[in-house]
Every structure is written in structure tokens, then in C-alpha cells.
Image (cartoon, rainbow, N blue to C red; front, side, top):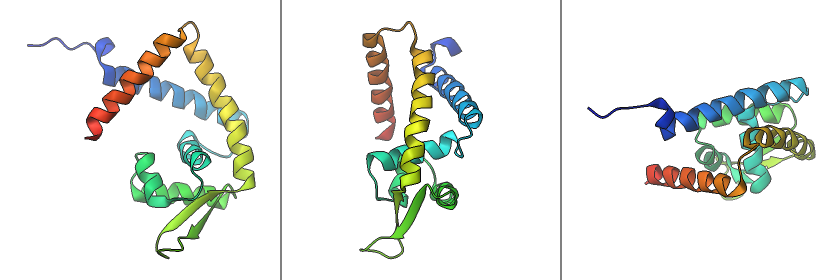
Amino acid sequence: MTEYKLDKSLGHLASRFSRMVLRRFNAVLQQNAMPITSEQYSLLVQLWDSNGLPQGMLAEKTAKDKTTMARLAAGLEERGLIVRLPSPSDARERLLYLTDRGKELIDRATALARGILEEAQRGIDAAELESCRDVLRRACANLSK
């Protein structure tokens, strides 16, 4: 029987790191009176990169189901951080756009996120970090096939 050690499991370690970062990020967002969660932040970041994405594509990019994406988008729209507009090519499809308020908030939230990541990466050199990113990207790609 093959021995299984959690401290050697890429999945366990990646998941644990992710949970720790998200827990810290949610706490910091709350401490700074930011009206979003880490889950909503991930949607806003996608829009920052590609404003005007269809809601369904955002669901794919953030690994959320369509119902969860609709709920997240509705909450952000209620706060005035995004707008959802009908697609010119298909009125059933909604395109999501950051508002000016959303852009301001994403700048502030990103500064908080960077602080947490700097803390997490302390004492790890740039080459090791890039190697870690590369391994995680390749592992994700392997599972996307």
C-alpha cells in the first residue's frame, strides 16, 4: 500500500494555503469596512482584467456554477460596484461591467490582498515562487483536459 502524507500532497497543501489566505483576506476586508467578500473580489478582479465579460464566462473563469455567479453578481450590482447589461447580440445574456465605485474598491482591496501575499511569501525567493506558480498552473492545466 502506498503511503499517503498530507504534508506531501500538492492538493492538500494548495487547498490549505488557499483557505488560510481567504480566511485572512475576508477578515482584513471586514476590518477595513470593505463591502465585499473574497469570493466577490475574485469576480471583480476578472472584470478588472476584462470588463464587459458575459456572466456565464465569468462563472467559468472563477470556477463557479451559474446560479452562484448570478447571486454574486446581483449582490455586487446592489452595492453599485458593477452593472449588468443585456448583450447586444443576445438579450438573454448579461454582460458585466465595473462601475467607477467598483474600480475604486478593487484598487483598495487589491492593496490589502497584496499585503497578505507579501506576508505569506516572506523569506521565499522569487525563483522558488515562480517555480511554485508554474507547477500549480501545469497541475490545473492537467485537470482541465
